[in-house]
Image (tube, rainbow, N blue to C red; front, side):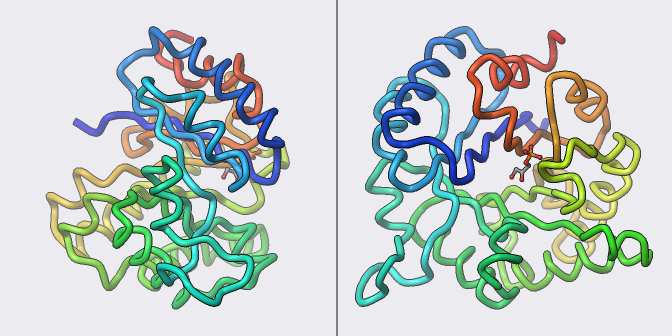
Length: 252
Ligand code: 13P
């Protein structure tokens, strides 16, 4: 019922030319891809060339961030409307790297989520605990708090255009993937929180991705868990062959 979604977050990697090249390689590799949804989040400058390279495919292109306003005197920023005009259909909000390095608050992330939806984009909203928070036994409180801050004000109808990505900070770029059981425990708690905050229908239909050192060698065990509906992939999304393998996880 929940269609799997494999998404690549390219972070601050690829020039426009390199992005176009990777986009073309993905377009070629994914021609006969299975029935899963696929999205890539290139850096802003690569969005146009990547969207062009992927034109005619079902791969969604998204921004890694957006500003809350539609336009105006906000030097250095990009609006959701601009992303949509450049070929994006989705945007990432709340990645831990932005929470940490750009000090993005829960309140700001709620406004960014609303701005993405206003621009007609679907939002991949990220959450996840640090090592210290996990060690302190605070994982579920931290994750539920981030989700309540970011998504709590949305209606059930708005949530149809939201995907949640659980990315434990300690698993990002470290090679230390959460075990499928650790991830499933948090995903189940997220789904329970969505159900109790809205209703069972929203809980059942909400796609929840896992992110953090996902690779072709560990994706099968992760995707086998009932509450894990896909993956948000960093490093392994930067090579067409490994991303293609992830998209084809069902045949690994
Ligand atoms: P890695 O797959 O490189 O660990 O990155 C995960 C991530 O942060 C995706 O948003």
